[in-house]
Length: 253
Image (cartoon, rainbow, N blue to C red; front, side, top):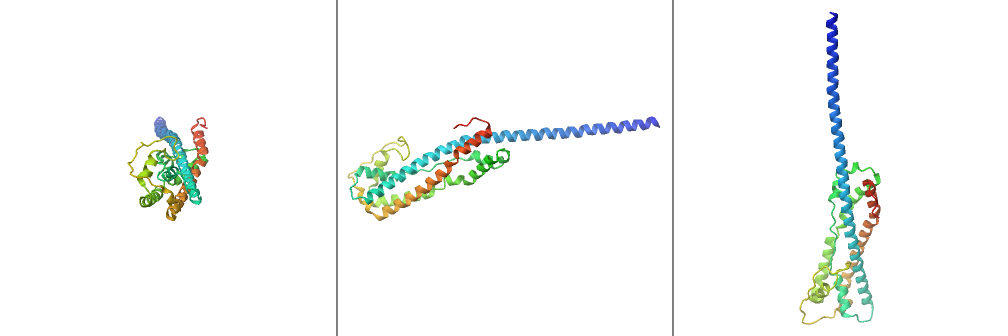
């Protein structure tokens, strides 16, 4: 009887030990899996953050280019209003160049794929709270970089409709093609020249109230877009520094 009791006791202990081993193995496997998944998520977040850094720096260059364009258009409009207020007769070629500046359109086509990948599911993996907040804010405001396109096209179409009636568009087109785009250092479009039977002096436009009204509308639009660009760029250096610090790389600035 004693021997049987000892046998039963040993069997129970063996079963308990075996059960503990199985449970421990399952828990260990789950732990390994959880650790592996967490590591994969961290590597995924690092990859997206690295891609975002490249993406964001490219977007900054686009906005810087856009701001140079805005400032040159603003300058041309200011010069046109100065001529309108002056009693002096402007040089026809110089006047055409000023008007031609208004016929360019610029809108940065920023990309946000890496930012979306970060914010939609991986933001919590970023350790720096300030960086998380800035990325979330940028994601919310990202559309403001491109939301001026429709307004700018509407303004240009209104100006072209007016110039078709009151100016020589072929003459202005030749002026546009023969110069570099506003804000650019080099000519990026192929030069061309439309045949003209006569040339037109556009100085009468400076006394036309409709033309001046169109200039005001375009000037307001340029100011709004410039303010938008400046707000975006004002935070760019600090955001880049935060991202590089999170990635553990030397600051680029």
